[in-house]
Length: 165
Image 1 (cartoon, rainbow, N blue to C red):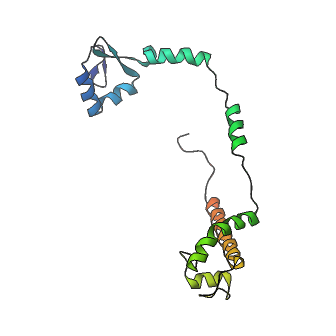
Image 2: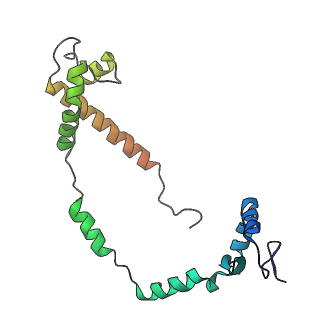
Image 3: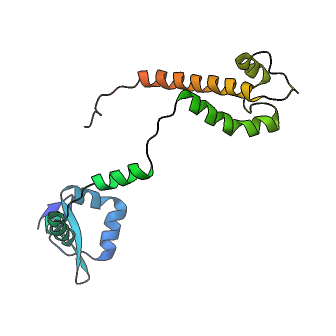
């Protein structure tokens, strides 16, 4: 009789017993000791993990199979290249996304007229047509604020390893 986590691992168990052990959390303690279940002839036994069918099958494939991720990485980089955009390109892209909404509503959703006027200046008048120049100035300001916020947040991060590493 060999006891692990309060259970005799040398005897055969029925499926119902294993399910009950799972539900009560007892299997975790047994598995932490290095034992896994294996079904043979309708009963369940605990065996060391090195003797399991799964481990034996894996060791055969692990010795023969090798993985080289460089080809996969090259394919991903070819299909999805990393491109750096200039601040002008980012501003233009944001203007193109925002122009339809601003033209339809006459304002920038989420901002009051006073906030927009503070950013763009006095020529942001309610009821007057919205020009691309106004939107460009607004987008440049918002992108600059986002960049400043990100830099500020990055300055508070540490680059040390995790305490469990």
